[in-house]
Image 1: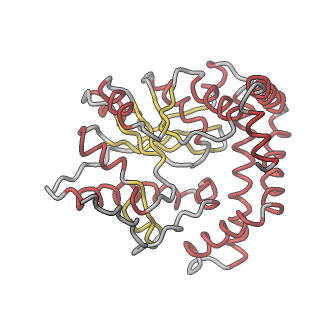
Image 2: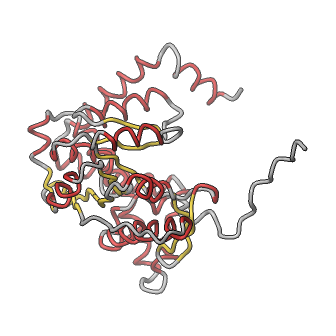
Length: 317
């Protein structure tokens, strides 16, 4: 067992609650810094990560070059890459800052555009599938659910480090939201929709071939999770894009019109058509504010088309 594994075993055991409390209170102390110090520190933290994390620096630059190489010079791409990392530092500092605010004080920094789109979708009584991404400060998305006045569940992948997992869950649920673990979460999602709740899915990450379909994203085939399309086709729940972007006055939640559900009678074709529509929405917001998309640091196009299929188990006969 490696030292890291030993640390995780200890941290996830008897010391978990103590470490969780330490992280929470330390983050709160950081968040109490004056605004100009917090903002400048966040940007500086991002630049430090850019300099020290060569792996993600290479991934981000390669992704940006592939997406914008024909439209930007290398210097412009490097400048955008720097802003992407600065956004990461700002996300961390903003999360810490949010811990120092009660509900009324925090809500003053948020503005909602397109509230009527969510209202009309919710009136249908089938629940609402919220299409979103690792964009702006996605960690504060549940604040929007509280502002809208609807129960908001977010599907997520649990972390291996339980103290940090506890902090993230506490952060995301303190205003009434809830979390649904991605693994084996299908039934919980259906139950939430049955109660006419909002269920958020972040649809901007690479997945394995068996989990997704290949959809053009920045003119490159990207293996995209088909779960949202499957849920929409099964339940008829409306799909509403929601993106939380940072602006000069705080945060603006952009709620877009419902994405119409396509049914052709061909299930595979329906999954592809609807997933492509969802992906176009994400690409549109990323093209408007490319520096606010965390996904540049992610190997979004890692799974390639025509990859080898899993081996079939031998027949028992």
